[in-house]
Length: 594
Figure 1 (spheres, rainbow, N blue to C red):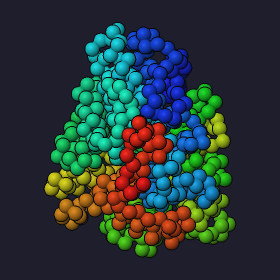
Figure 2 (figure 1 turned 180 degrees about the vertical axis):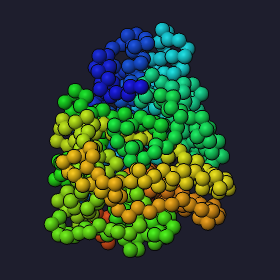
Figure 3 (figure 1 turned 90 degrees about the vertical axis):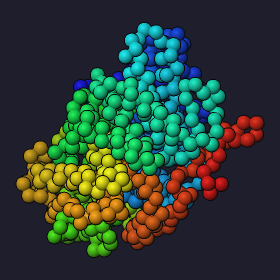
Figure 4 (figure 1 turned 30 degrees about the vertical axis):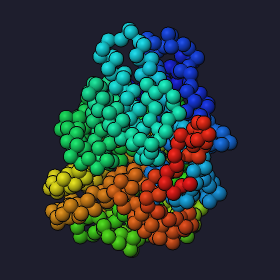
């Protein structure tokens, strides 16, 4: 199955003359495009509008850079690396203090509503909503479609709209609902939109087919998984459990392949192996699409490569010592150290130059660490060993580590990297939901419902995959032969095992294990902050993180999380100002941000 490629999206939109408006005022109802509705109201027109809605998934539809609201690609990156991972304590902002300084108050939780990053994220997400609503409006006037085609198009549009609103809901909580039937888009944010999001995913689940002609399109089971996630966020554990179990028992990806974990954890982050049995819904990325830019190649992630390295730029998104320590395992049991894991930390080269002698940590580790974090003396994919300080812009500020899940391989860089601009792009997809995530969410619901044995079995399925020695990172021995330059010797002391009933003796113990497993399996994928908030432990976890990590790196020395205020980000002040009607703003700020 081919990708729903973003290069095709761009060509389709240009052909119709309906590329996105550069206006930042999302509440001002925009024109549908340069062509009239009568021209668009046909099979080709409405399908190209739908492709345009998919194009908004990359977060780059916010209207470019402006003095009031920012607009750089990373501000609305779909993987939420700032709002989900850095703010969740898994990564430092990185680089140095004076680079993108607006991120610092966000992740240390003292930012005001005037921070332009929030406005960019808001605009980009509502741009996606606008496009889905346009699809539904034009679809209603389109006559040359079969009922099956009509159902498929409308269900895809509502799936996408559900996704965009889910993003807004978990970020800002109270946001205005605008759909294809809304006459005045300047709506208040005084109604909880969870029921509307549920309705969109339920409709998509009922109407979408199991398979699609293009892999990147949502199918029935992607809608089911997202519906379960929506229930889970509302603590509707039984409803979530029921639909998740259907996904596990019957779900297939858009190519018709039954969901199952890949044999190797690392294959989830290799562009050469994407769109596979673990893919539930990905945002499709394409390198070298002929546009002369990296706009199709995950430009939201363009800052997040080791500095002064073969990748050129820019030294952001550095995993934290706290995250690295989380991967320690007990040398006897092979299980995570759940309490006091920051005692006896994993050895790093903090404070050392690349010419200083250094021996990597020899203690017991979960092998997923070295597919998630780049650390000195350990192979950095097939680029040789990570050299330490020479690839780090400011160790004292962001620490000694580098990201890894979003890094392309040397051997295949010609296909899957894009060097069209000052920082690289990649063809590595953004995982919105992958099958491992569904297994862990299902385990969470099982524990909440008292089925501790079932919860343990699901978590152990994840750990069994991590135990596959064929998937361990191996020592790198030949820098001149990236395709076969690895030995058969593991790169570190990997020691991982399955849980037993001793760790799942009661609900609280089981949940503690599941929470850690999500941190290990899904690290650096944008989930952590939102997980901590929905579990109700963000204040305790993040303040403990600030106390520990702040003693190591300068970037979070003054961080402090206060619940419930910081459970959500502030409504962008720019949007409140734009919402004024008859002298009164229609939008209300989140509590304690005024």
